[in-house]
Image (cartoon, rainbow, N blue to C red):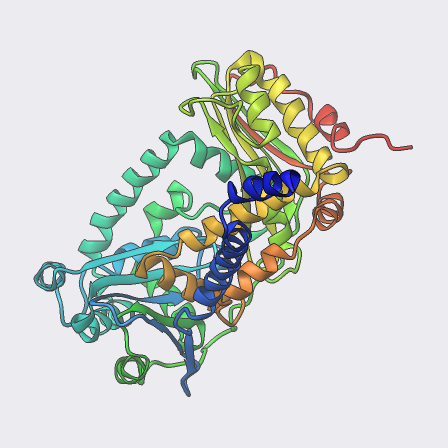
Length: 477
C-alpha cells in the first residue's frame, strides 16, 4: 500500500495535461506548416491574356492602393551586332527625351504630378520600362509608357546630349571593377558571339549611333509579339487588357526584313588577365557554363550556388557561417569578400565565384574555391543541401515582397518560360532537390570542365590556366 501511495504522489508531480501538451505542440507545428503551404497556394493568381496582336498582358492583383506596371521587351544587347552594339541601351535612354506629343519637360512634370516613378533598364536579353504609381493612376501610367515606347522623338539635339551622358556612364562603369570583371568574363566565355558584347557598347559605336540606327532598331524589335505588359499590386486584369488594346492596338507586328532570332552562343573555356599593380586588390572570377532558364538543371545549380554562399569582412564571425568556403576564407584571411553567382540566359548561363583578394592570397583562395567545386560533385551532404534549399526558397519568396519585384518576376518569366511559375510550385521544386541531385548536376557541369577565368589588378600570383584547368577534377579510384 505504501509503495502504491508513493507512486501516486510521484505521478501527481507531473502536469495532468503533459501528454496533451506535447500533442498540442505537434499539432501546432503541423498546423503552421499547413498554414505556410496554404498561404503559398492562396497567393493571388497570375492572370495572362494574349491579344490578337501577340501582345501578352499579365497581372497579379492584390487590391492594394499602389501598383507597378511595365513593358518587358524581348530585346537587348544579345540581339545586336558588333556594328550596332550599344543601340538597345541608347534607345532606352532616348525613350525619356520626349515624344511626338510630350517634351522631356512635360513628361517629367506629368510623372511628378502623379507622385509616380518612371524607370527603365537594359540587360543582355531584355529591355524594360516600368512605372510605380497609385492604383488609380494606372491608366495614365500605361498611356505614358505606351507613348515613350512607340513615339520616341529621337531628335538630333537630344541624341547628342544623351551621347555625352552615356559616355560618362561608361566611365563610371569602368571604375566599378566588379562590372569590369564580369564584362571581361562574358567576352572570353562567349567569344565571337553576341553574349560577348557589353550592354553599353564600345565607345566608337556610342559616338557614331544616329537616329536612323535607333529607328531601325526600334522598328525591328519593339513589336507586340515580343512584348509583355505586366502589372502587380492594385491592377485590375480586365482594365489592363482594355488599356493595352487602346494604346497598343495600332502597333505593327510585321517585319520589313529578316525576323530577329536568338543566335546560339557557344561557351569557350579560356582566360583573360588585365594586370594592374597600381590597384590594391585583385578581382577574380571563375565560371563554368551553366544552364539556361528553361533547363531542368537550373534550380539544382541555384541550390549548388547557395551552398557556396557569400562572405565579406564586415560579417562578425565566420565560425557561425554554415558554408565551408566562408569559414576557410575568414579563418585563413584568404579574401576580402567573395560571392557565388548563377547568371542565367535563355539557353546558357555562367555559374561560378567572384572574389576580391590580397595579391599574395590569390593562389590559396583559388585552391579553396576549386576544392569546393569538386566537393559539390562528390561528397556534399544531405544536411548541407537541406539548409541550402531552405535558404534559397526563403530568399526567393522574400524578394517578392513588393509590387515592383513581383511585376519584374512576371515580365521576365513570361519572356523566358512563356508562363509565370507560381510560388508554391517553385518552392516545391526547390524542396524536391536532394544531395544526390546536386552531386549529379555538379558532376555534369563542373567536373573536368574547362572554366572561364577573368582577373583584374595585381594578379601575378594567379595560377596558370593549365593549373586551374587541372584542378577541375579529382582523381577517383
